[in-house]
Length: 413
Length: 225
Image (cartoon, rainbow over all chains, first blue to last red; front, side, top):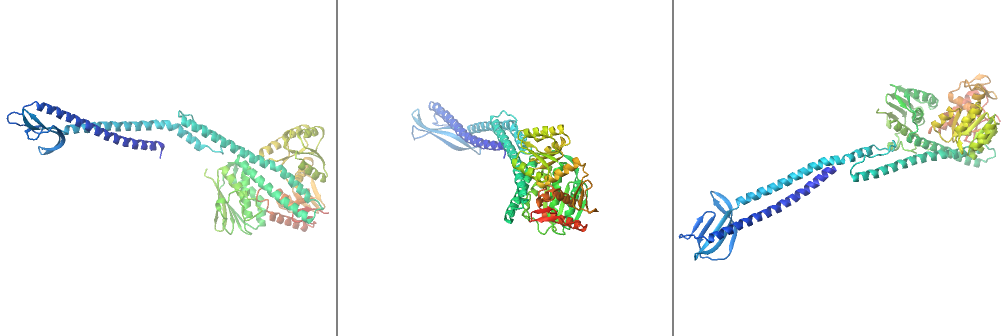
């Protein structure tokens, strides 16, 4: 729920409770005041009547307001009460006063009544007026709030949008708009320093990985050349040779891992900026020349289904690498005498190759250091392929269908 | 042939030096920018091998110096950075070739020989090894004057072997030479084995000797010794 709605809802709930309470208290208060007024009025009438002579009949009746009747009872008390009287077939509530007084040496019971209806009416209209003005005020506050808050929150939403667009890849720093609200400015300041820090950290990390990989190249070159030289020596025993051999194999593996990681880092760091218009058909044809001998060796049944060309604007060496990796995989992971099919159409390229079982863990297939059935593989080929595709804005997917491994590249734009 | 090797990593410099001496080149070395600068100023070299990152300056600067003084020098860049920018800049200012660390010495050797051929023999040098003769311009191979029909990879193989004759050539360096450093393909030695077998058969069928020795599972040696 939006903050403004939450605020309004809470605000209205509390205000309603408060108003009901205030209304109730007000009603009680007003009623008490009105009753006291009525009682006072009745008392002052009683005083008037006391100075009055009821006359020879010994009684005076003005129904339903006044009744003076002879009585034997004597009391100094004045009794107030509410009573219901039937007038013209309607019941009406009256406030009545009953007193026993001696006038001209005779005892009388004096009853004075005042209709409550008028005072009730007054009470109700008063309460209504007060409540409706409270309600109006509430509505007004709600509307003003709504209007103001839109204006107040505008800078917040603007900056939120900017933050959504913030990406480490674009390395554009987050620059929030200033607002008049201190809290927002404070948050913006914190966000800005946070994102700046993330950017520098990310940048440093990227630089670090790249530099570290570069720095490793020279020692690797030393180890490699020294072992190669050692292998050429004639006096080595068989045991020594096998030791040097395993050093050599390891350093070669290390070299490949390093250059693979370096490549990944450099793609991530977007260092392949040169782009040119390339036809995928042309690239495939070139690679075909490289691979035709390998396919012959494996006795593969190769078909190239060229439906239409796909013209892309991208980096040539990355594209070569991508096609090379996928093509090479389709040969290496093929079975002897298997099928290899390439299907090219606009915005789609797929490599099919025969296989017995689907690759396990499709989701982890493109992770770094993911190894297939060959333990000598470094496990970076598919990670690099996917990274290149991501860099180009393409999607690389795998599926297994009718005893075929299928790697396909798709582009939406 | 006189070669100057400029490389700041002493262990690597020494190894390249030893390797090239065995190939019977005259080799001089420089392990820092100013030493290299002095040597370039005083002497003439047929081939200069330059590391790009040097203490005291950039190898690219040295290349510019070299080109100003004697433009006929063949220049081979070795760099720890496999970056296209460096490569393009290097080739742009006059370097002939570019090789990335860590390289195989056999690969370096083949590159130097190719460079010498291009620069000093206009590419048309014929290399021969007993009855086998290679024309590097036409990419043809003859055994006792009979022309062999080789595939591209087979030609690349025999040329690589002859450039590195009498040396141990590891499977890894062959793989890299044939397929570049494409990550997962390089390890597939079955392919190399098949290529080599086919090459052997073709040479023998043409009446040539099989000079290829398998060296304890590590690689091969092309030798008549």
